[in-house]
Amino acid sequence: MRYITTPIYYVNDIPHLGHAYTTIIADTLARFYRLSGHKTLFLTGTDEHGQKIEQAAKNKNYSPKEYADKISLEFKKLWDEFEISYDIYARTTDERHIKFVKQVFLKMWEKGDIYKGEYEGYYCVSCESFFTQSQLISQCGCPDCGKETKLLKEESYFFRLSKYEKNILKWYESEPIVPKNKKAELVNFIENGLKDLSITRTSFEWGIKIPSNLNDDKHVIYVWLDALFIYISSLELDEKSENLGFLPAFVHLVGKDILRFHAIYFPAFLMSADLPLPKYIAAHGWWTRDGEKMSKSKGNAIHPKIIADAYGLEVFRYFLLREVSFGNDGDFSETMLINRINAELSNEFGNLLSRIIGMSLKYSNGKILQDEVLNFYKAELKEANLHLQNALEFIENFQFNRYLEELFKALSVANLSISKYEPWNLIKANETSKANALVSLCANILAKVSLLLHPALPKSTQKVAKALSFDITLQNYQKLILNDELLNFKANACETLFPKIEKPLLNSVKEELKKDENPKIKIEDFAKIELKVALVKQCENVKGSEKLLKFILELDNKETRQVLSGIAKFYKPEELIGKQVCLISNLKKAKIFGYESDGMILSAKSGDKLVLISPNGLVENGSLIG
Image (cartoon, rainbow, N blue to C red; front, side, top):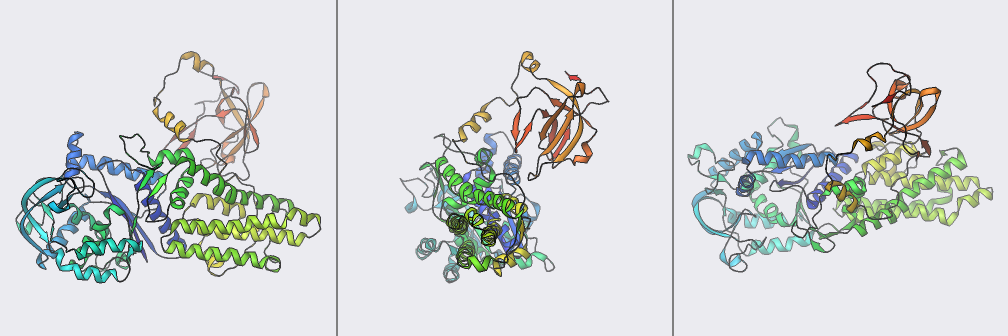
């Protein structure tokens, strides 16, 4: 069983590139383990308590809960738009979590791991952490974020963190820290001596109050003690819970700035609460842009959705996973993004599919049989399978860039084989069996790669599967990946995967966003549009496209038009024949998926629902609208 979590993101601001990176990594892992047959649970969510949230809400004239609701929804909406396959979206303001944290606090108190005292130290509101004077930079600066700290003295409850020094170091012997080079920093921190941790505050209100049994309700539980237990509280554990099997967690994915909290404080809290420790804590680096730290003041910060909207979500996922070695800092460069699209996604991946489809339709009427692959191309298949096995090892070890690199090396084996053996010349030389075996070799390599690439690029690989008439399933994963089997395929025409990018797109998307959301047009502008009623005479799916329908429409004087419309996911062709629709009839003709389209059919869309616009009653075909 695999329990995978992102951090729960702090709601002091909207999602950024680093949040998207962690979440896409977690989503890729969750999809991989589901595909390979593991029962998997994937959690993400938001951390909503603390002084920083209280202050941010006040500055924006919200109550803390209203503000938390607003920002948490921003995160959830983005993950839903990105089709993140989370099972649990958890919030620290959830009642189940508040109840659980109080229960754990009381258990730790009764165990003697929590005691009451007084704390004096330099407090950083941004990091929600206390520091000693010797740890500060420039007299009062926070050593983690550089912001000014405040000297505070207040009554506090303390957790006996010092008690667990040896136990944490013992746990490190099982190599739970990823990458392994991060362990040395943690060991050094612990060996310098762990001080007991202040775990309550009295200087603000927004948080979970300590248990009422202690009769001390001015104390709010420290945000990290509160937040870290979300990974446990969200499982809603009891003796009959199905989720018991998900403990210990398989991996908690975090940014390097919060590694200490997850790899020192959290295991100590878990030991105190008699809960199992996770198998891995995996920490990634930060993202810069063109070599500079991203910030609003520099004007170089970029919302993840802008990149995804400009280049496509699958491209965005691929770039983040491929560009940087896990644990290192990454740099977002639009130039490098375009290079990845053109050199890898377009040339190696998309082009291979096009070549396979084209050759198979030409040489064997789309039938791709595997019988003679091993007779002619055993060495090439062995080389490709080696790369696939390497990819498996790399994804299991959180080396996502190497995992993708190996998959694309397998694709290169197929592409180079086509160049080397020249199937078009084999056909001319009447070596048809060898030519068709080469197509089958390439189709099987592409299918195997698509299965392993599916966790990273779920939509694109489904298009490959549809084009070759196979399914991305556990059964085929076992056949093609675990057992090294080969399959037969039936090729179908399909859309081009990853068209090449000729020029940067981000600026044009940003300019569109800057425009007035409700631009006003003049009446003479509207008068240029010719709207007519048309009758659907014929309608059919466009072969190879998931979204296009091809219409033959009748207007006045029996004039007919061919029009393509991307509504196949909402209507079946037979439902539309005989129906009147509204058409923009004076649009310039366009070529769509190889077909001429002479007009645009009007529809209205709300959320996941789309409805064609039609006259309320029957009117003559060709009637003008407006």
